[in-house]
Length: 425
Image (tube, rainbow, N blue to C red; front, side):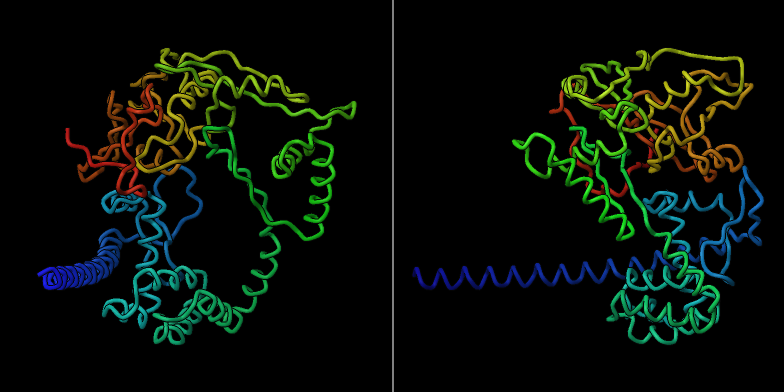
């Protein structure tokens, strides 16, 4: 009986396992079909909102956008954000999806046909489209001819090789310009916008070899002079922070500018020119560290109602709005408030230049509000509730709505790439 029961149990598990795999495969196939449908819908949306020839002279106003290569349709800029929100994307991500779809349909017809037939995955086809956007039409046609039949299995390196080969054949001047431009890929990025709660910041870059060797020697030498009881990686990090901080007397000086203010339930310290907060204890460590100059700006009451009779808010008001709202108020946009315009919810002069009537909006989304029929309301306990020209509503939650007790924090969302919500009044 035991042997028979075991055999029956094994058979049952095998049947269930087969059922799960069959269902999973069917789901994957359905997802692939839906991705193709969304690509078609993106093309349909562009066709419904055609743009004219792109006018780059327009500085502040809605304009037509070239979202794919030469010869492909353009789109009315105001239509991009509406589509992006509907499909759960940021404005930039939505524009990229629309551009890839148009590039495939109008400049890579062979590859487009294979995508529609389910023979090439949408993500792989989009990689090709992104690579060919900068090519002239005849060069894009050559890439389409060479890659369409094997796109389902070719590597990213092969895609790049065929694109650059077509560029050299059909646009040699551009190929040389890109070679020269490649020399400008050197960079050094300090990601101040995403400091950790512990006050750590990610740094990366690409340097000329000679510069890299010189930097390595300087960091190595400085790290050797620091406390040997600290781990080497920690000393190297500290040495990098001390670069270029010598004062007129040859000593090491670094300056940190902070804003100190209170939030409901706890104290926080905001570091100037970043979107990060550190603990009061961390600030105390900085103040006690040799060679560190800490400047504490006056306390700003984030709930105070500041106002001016002018259209332009005062510098203190800009600081208050930036500290209060942290980033662009449009759903899904994470551009730091310090890089945004101060947007009047009720247009000036009908609406005052006052704290309660101002919100940070990046230039793209400021234009949507001013010229394209978008509107928003600041709703306490909810966020910025935006209404599109078609009457659909979306929420951009307040960044600073953090419970005093960390245990009350909401669970991580199922879709971390979808930072906005449909709103039901």
